[in-house]
Length: 182
Image 1: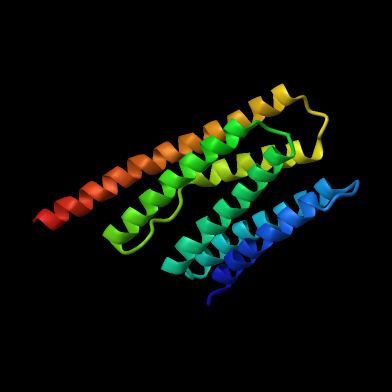
Image 2: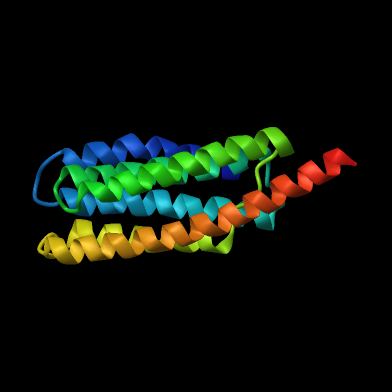
């Protein structure tokens, strides 16, 4: 297993740690949870840089990396929703979008026997989502209406990224189908 894949695996293992820390109680639980989330995000940055710099990209890495991102993001959004920080509709939008992405990923993997790398918009949406969620965890006095707008903006960036992936998905499927027809 490569270093980037180990880092992605560590990120996946940090998901239950985040959940436990977030709900453990105490005055500083959200600070500790934000630190776990930051550590997980750091593994995301490192695995991508190491994989590209040292040519350690792999099919497994193109599955583990987004899986780690999605699991951690899902844990964060569900925890802050259960905690009453953001409304339930945010989780619904996130889950629908991720289910569609997962379905598209399975289709592409079956057609291409590989997973395309993430794009700039996908990474940007991850950064925006991270920033918004950390702010909402650490600054609990933010009014719910403002928190809803903030998470709505993060989800809008996420949906923009989804649109770019959808466009690329359609293009790749058409290319594969046109090559198969020849």
